[in-house]
Length: 395
Image (cartoon, helix red, strand yellow):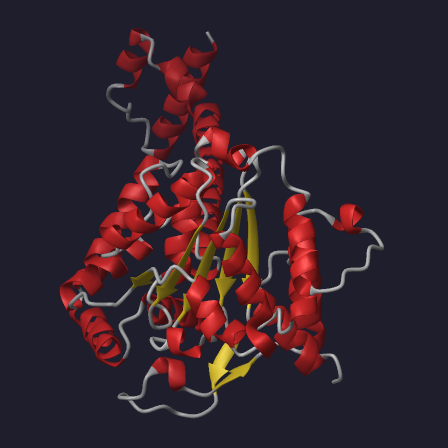
C-alpha cells in the first residue's frame, strides 16, 4: 500500500510537470509490485554506502598491517643480519662449519676455526645461520652455551673475562673470589659448567668477532687460554674467530699458533653481476610464509619488475663495479629509505658518477631526539649506541 501511494504521488507530480501527460510504465511497475523496491531504494543505498565504507576501512587496516610486517622483515634482514635470509654461494663453507659445531655440541669434541673474508662477505651471516640450525636440535638447544666477544669492545683480558662471566650467567658463582691469573679464572668458569665427565659437560661456543684485534692485545692471553682449553681434555669448547685479515696466522705468537688447529674457512665474493641482480631481488622479496599471500605475490611481482628496470640495473652495475659485498648493498637500500623518511639530506649537489655511500649528508635530528630513541629502542646496535654516547653526551 505504501509503495503504491508513493508511486501515485510520483505520477501526479509528473503529470503536473508535463501538462497532465502520464509517464508510461509507472502504473505497470506499480501493478507488477516494483514500487516497494523504488520506495526502499534510498535506505538500501545508504546501507550499501555504509558497507562500502566499512570495507574500505577494513582493507586500509589490512594494508597497514601488511606494510608494518614488511618493515619488520626488512629491518631484521638489513639491520640485524637475520639468520632467516638466504645464503649465497657459500654452501660448502656452511656445511663445513655446521659439521664442526655439531661435533663439538653432540660428540663433545673441542675445535677451533677461523672464518676469513673481506668486510661484507657474509662471515657473521654464515655463523648466525649455522647457530640457528644448531639450536633447532632439541637436545642441543637445552645444553649448549654461547659466548660472543668483539675485539672492538673487549679491549683487554679483564673486560673479556667479565663479559664471559656475564654471558655464562656465573656472576653468583664467582662472587668475591680472587684469582691469581687469567688462566685460573677461565678454568674456574668452565669447571663450574661441568656436570660429570667430558661427554656430559656443557659445551661452550666462543665467537670472537674482529679476531685480529685480540691478537694485538698484550701477550695474547685470551687466545692462548681458549686454544689451550680446546686442545685439552676439559669442557668441550669451539673457538670461532671472524677476521678480514688474510695474514692472521702471522699475527699469532708461536705458543698460540701451536695450539690452534689451523682450520680456516675462506669467504670470497666470487659471483658475477647476474647473480648480484638475483641477490638484490631476493633481498627485497617477501618470504613464502608471509601472512597475506595475495599481498606478498603482488609485492614480489613488483620486485621482479624493479630488478628488470634498466635504470635500476644501471645503478646496481655502477655499485657492483665499485663494491659487490652484500653489506654495501644493504647500506644502499637503507640509504634510500632514510632519504624518503627525510631523516637525512645531501649536504651539497652531487654529481651523477659519485657513489651514494661516499656522499656527505646532514642528519635532520637533534641530539635530544637521538638520545630518546636510543632509550626506547632496546635492540639498538652497540656501535650506534657507543657513537651516540661518546659524540652527543657532551653537547
